[in-house]
Length: 278
Image (cartoon, rainbow, N blue to C red; front, side, top):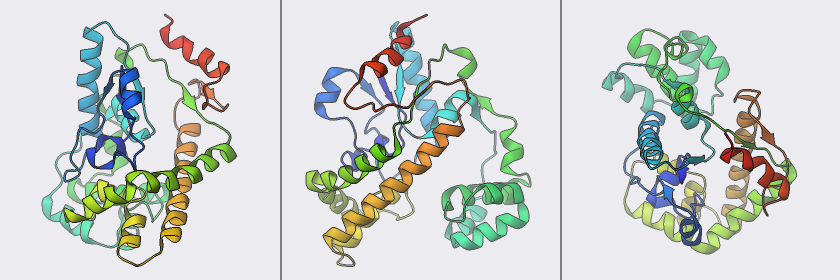
């Protein structure tokens, strides 16, 4: 069974923009945790890990094989390694941090948690806000809390990881093909439906790649071609960050497949065959 590990594909509001599995895909294998969350509510890595643990346990009880698929590294790390036991953040502090400008938060984090500030780029507003609110609310840095993770399943399962690292030029070409195809196949209508709900623009679903670019086009701020170009650029930038993370962050002994996975090649089939071994 396929279990989703992609943060955007969790949302039922983003079937097109998240490139969720098609009806045909769903018919070929059972899929779990796709389109299960409404965009009005955020889903943290801890929330997803709890859902994934339940699905994995249920699949194991059926004596079947769960295959986790997706590109949200933080989700996978949280599931395998556990989560830091950070206590609830003071609501007043959270409000102050989340309403402040990203640059101001990063400057403040530099003074209170230099290690986190050095690791995070100023543009990474979500993680910067999280690190800042943790140190302000608890008096301890997020790095300190993360040294005491709990709830990971990595030591309790037989893990068969495989990281796909296709050639970058092939990957970026796919990114450039992907966004116009989405626009032509329902992404505009998807964003229109989101905008009609008047959701908080800070919600993850509203910050997904393509939402802001298409929303700007719908409001007349940009033209269609410019929106597509900006969406392509954002997709490539995100793919670059994912590529870098998966190339360097997982353990070095995890196998890396560096060929072209689509269409399926014999080398990939051979690489995947070990999932059934042992």
